[in-house]
Amino acid sequence: MKDTEQIAEKIRRFIELEEEIYAPVSSLDFHSSDSDSSLSAPSEVDNNITSGKATSDNSEPSMSMDEQLNACTTLDELRALCEKAEVLKTDLENTRLVFGKGNPEADLMLIGEAPGAKEDAQGEPFVGASGQLLTKILAAIKIERKDIYIANILKHRPPDNRNPKPEERARSLPFLERQIDIIKPKLILCLGLVSAQTLLESTQPLKELRGTFHTYRTDYQLTVTYHPAALLRNKHLKRDTWADIQQLRARYDEIGAKPLLPSL
Ligand code: URA
Image (tube, rainbow, N blue to C red; front, side, top):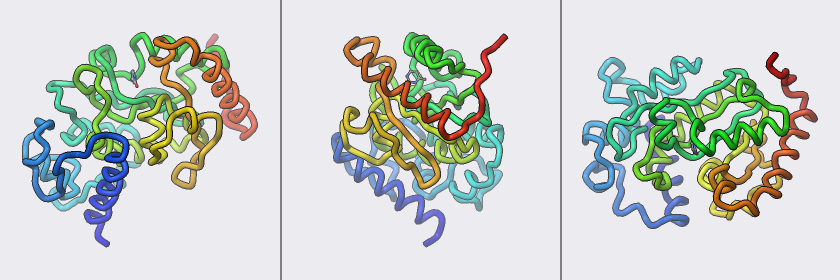
């Protein structure tokens, strides 16, 4: 199978799975850009998605999306590709890329859902209220944000803080997977249901996905906890989150991940 067919097949399988969780993606097909009226991206860009091209940039017309992604060997190269990738955008106009932030050699990577208004304004993940809570949670297990890497399933803000749509997640996933493969974290922590279900290709509820370590794409150990925004709304989730976070910290030490030194 050619690269473009493989990526189209992967997206098709992903959307099938997502349709089991959410409403069906109405008549989304891989040959027409007109079917998804919720996306305002121009049709040229949609054709790029469906033909496996990552961008509308004409400079690399012969490279498939997979080839362009695989050609990125550093986060800077991947960021540059993301900057011009219309496929990463949502139907909210003029949003800023929130690529991800942290130590490019981190052994722990946290993956949230999607940028909110503050993240969009600053171009950084988790800088709003849930980000502040996240910093405190990490501090409780003696981890500073400078030591880890944080990214989201989506790299652009969806409107009205709505959940990312299945097709948005499917389009963003290859970029996030490449980001993970460049960083090669020993551990991944999914924050919230959207992150966990997307990466694990699961429809299970969060309470069934948390509390254990999953093997993710053969090479990575992945665990799941509640999204900090959920904790802000529901204090009863704190006890389970604390258990998850302590288990994460214990595993970090057990596998001999990089020592975490407090800032002076
Ligand atoms: N919620 C997320 O999932 N990610 C962010 O970056 C901010 C809030």
